[in-house]
Length: 376
Image (cartoon, rainbow, N blue to C red):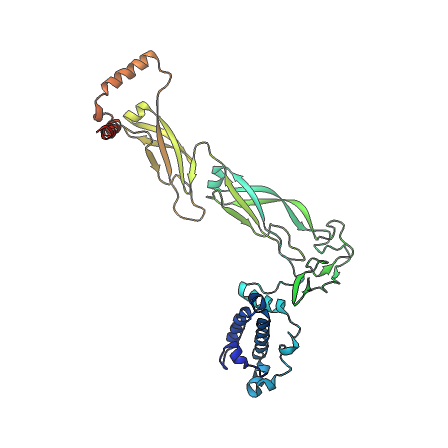
């Protein structure tokens, strides 16, 4: 049976670039992989072999030149595909390259160094510490490189040997019917090495658990949910790999006076009935000290006063926030007879309706209209 033209198989021009050849091969290989064609896997497998054979020829400059000059006769026997199978490769190899390139990985490095794990430390701060920044000393349990064996895992004076199972690759192939599956070597667990005489301190692991005291510099303006990264302070890497990072997770404790919303602070300020009526000045706290807040006459409870620039300087830049003071008019308690009499007398003098109590009068009118509609 005559073979189909390789260029037609890949649906490319004869002057196609290497990148175009590879792109077409990826697309075709995924399309005709037997696992994606369960209704007719045999036909898909045959097509897949042809596509692979075409790619092996056209991706090799010498083979491509011979094919362009002499056709199939110029490359018969040199291509890895055809009836001879996959030329030592298998679906695992092919799709490790194809899908690995697409999803950003390629085949896993065999017997390579491994980066240490990242760690997280939850740190509680007071509002003042979060706003102004602080140097926090933290104690973290972490895997560190064994000082006895310098991370090799082998007893001092000895060295690890090449793994006899995977021959240093860190991975082995398991044949499962038509497919060949690549797995982490069960003997060396992917390191590619075996330790015959393990270190007495780390027992061959190359790392030991220790408590490490660190100084975490917390910048001003952090808030709950922010993270501070301490590069290289995570777990030590394996087989000479780099250390991971330590992430300090910030949790700001509740404050007795202030609530925080981003860069702004909020507080409630109780004021006396007389101050609300006649006005006055009172001291209010800020994180930078006391300031005087002027209360105008006839201030109603719930009114917000804004103190610009008395909030929080944002950790990521931007304007300093504000402090909002919400006044709460306090009702006098534990009145004497004389005081009660004075309040009653004041109440009688204020019975002018809308003139003295506009909100109360407005509310009373709304209630009256509501019931009039119900009964009307």
